Amino acid sequence: MYGSSPGAPRPFGASAAPRPTTLSARAMRRLATGPLDAVTLMRDVCQVDRLQKDAAERMAAALLGSHPEFVYLPSGHWALAMAPATVSGTSTQADVRERAGTTAGTPPVEPSPRLRDIAFAVVDVETTGTRAGAGDRITEIAIAQVRNGEVVDVYSQLVNPERPIPPYITALTQISWEMVRDQPCFRHVAPAVVERLTGAVFVAHNAAFDWRFVSEELRRGMGHELSGPRLCTVRLAKVLIPTLARRSLDHVTRYFGIDIEARHRAEGDAVATARALGRMLTLAEDAGATTWAELERLVSTPAERRKRTASDRRRRAFPLPADEDYIA
Image 1 (cartoon, rainbow, N blue to C red):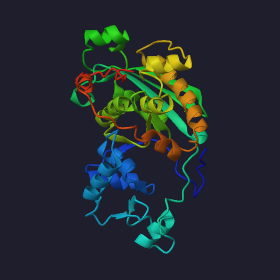
Image 2 (image 1 turned 90 degrees about the horizontal axis):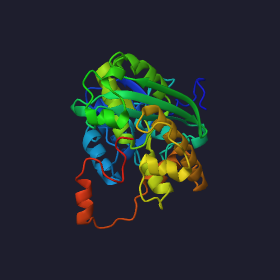
Image 3 (image 1 turned 45 degrees about the vertical axis):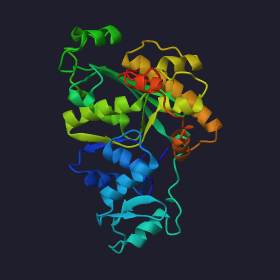
Image 4 (image 1 turned 135 degrees about the vertical axis):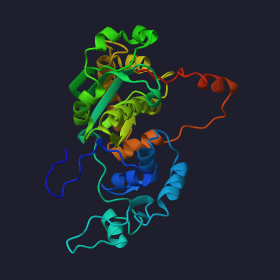
């Protein structure tokens, strides 16, 4: 794992900090750790999970191109134009390019971390509904920490959502108001959540769902914004288990012979997802992806495109698509 000695790379993973008030301020904070490609940068800055490369490049150019604080490098990465001062107290754009290893158009020199060296925080939340930005809240959160493919720690906590729990949610999760009314509100458990997410890759089954809820709760409770790398095990399964007809957590765990001790409860689902992640990371390494950069390329490789049918459009009109587990 990364050390903390002077000059050592920063820990690879998520972080939570006071929310910047503008998109350019978010970009400055994100680029403080080094150059990033447009897709990674715009996903974090704009808080979107899926973004095509050409769209990300247009967004980055529109957002950052007119600001002198940013520089577009020959490698296709964005960086801060004025990097931290050198020993002499000055820094130029040429210095930025040289430190980034992009003078000749090559990628940044800092190596991508090996998958076996990365800490993964596998998150599952139970909620009062599906709309993180429209009043729905977390009722339970679990974080299973994975290192070298093994679950090494599990944190689980019921949360008072400060609003009623709909009966159909109670029927699904077995979490009732009586169970949570004396539990802490999210703002009280937020420090423990941030501690377990910091320095780890955020992982979830349908990561966009859990990321949105955790981000919104951190914003509401602490005024902080969650940022950093994330990994969706639905998308990972789509690439690594192409013969699997559906990628719900039930189907993925059944494929690997993994039992879910308590379905639609945060701890049971998080631990099962973490175990499935360990199996899929082994498949990824067998496919030649041994670093984070290689895994990202593997997951982002577009599948063969086909014309969308009327059946596809009808299926996508439903709030819970059949091939994705939105309440994982």
